[in-house]
Length: 299
Image (tube, rainbow, N blue to C red; front, top):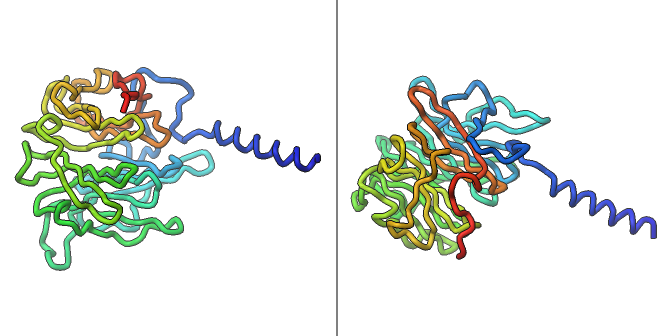
């Protein structure tokens, strides 16, 4: 009997510990101003966008070097601190950008200018991915689907919990320079690609989509200039892309600077984003409930 009681107590303690387990970026309290995320001072000011593994203990990011080349780097949270950032194993000698890790942590999607065997001189961006097996990333695979990768630039890939792919593209059938598209996944392949329409997509650059499946929302970046700066972060209900439903995040996030690359971190508590003011580039984050977004829209 004592052994049985001890067994259940062990389970309860374990469950309680899991409930209290924090992500490395968790803050002690709700913040009402964006906080800078600095995991490695050596790459501070040189990060374009980032993504985390589901446990929040690995961060992958696009790193801009002194030559303006872009590579994907990573860092691990071990023994209470972040490790020195290193280049990923699947890197190439061309630009690799916009990493995004799937909800299950098994795939990392990214945009790359790497050449193809049948087209070694290509310079446009395509969407690629790597799969993780036994904690090791495999060889890069280009999404071999003409509905997704066109002769133009594709980038800023994001995948929702059902495998649907949101991405930006400069293909000629758009409304502006870069538009946001949705590639529907049928469990095997992408069978249909649609432009999200003239309310989401403007005559300017619209990119960096981010899906909050839990709250049925799409966040994205746009140059349309309806906010305070050069580029702002917008949001809309996924099931309603009408013009009146496209809203700009409030001035806590959007300032007179350049804000882009919204990212909902694991735990669904924080919005990370990039801000550029003058020559200064920062990765910031804030509790999502204080940024003027209704994240609890009825589906």
